[in-house]
Image 1: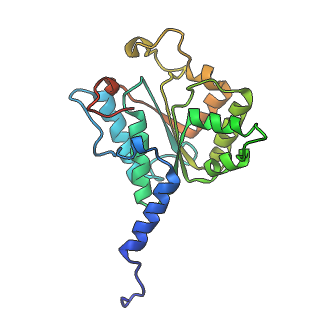
Image 2: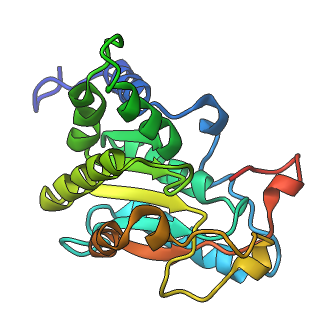
Length: 231
């Protein structure tokens, strides 16, 4: 007991961090990801710019961004470290006691679609509610896989709710934004690869622009270097 009153012990904060980390549901594959161990090859100016912005975001949140556009959308070719950066932001925010939750887009679609099956105990509310309520949502790999119209409507509901409640969303995608320059040649993606608008619809793309600052993450494909980070 100090003259000012009771002070919480370090173990209290350690327990709270442990609870927040468990609720965040960051996959084991990405739990090592931090801003400090993000590889920045010599001359990779695009990666350095993206890394600097994510460092500032995690340090200044929620003061860095404007009142409505308080999220980030990291886009670029596969293997450049978008997932690493988004998880690293979440790790910093968790250390500050800010609730975060990781959701893989493809897995989320499966969970939503599974709620249609009357034999499964999962409910749409049970899947969606945590994504509505958490302070910072990390939505990884947006646009991967085929989504039903109902699943896209559910996704729009999630993002629209978070926008109206001014809750931050961090999004990653390998898809090019329609207004950006074409990177498919650089990333060796096939010419038929969908744009963000084609994958999620123009209405949802427009909402993402209202919610997030779009950040290009450009650099070498680290998936071709097994000893280094994965996207």
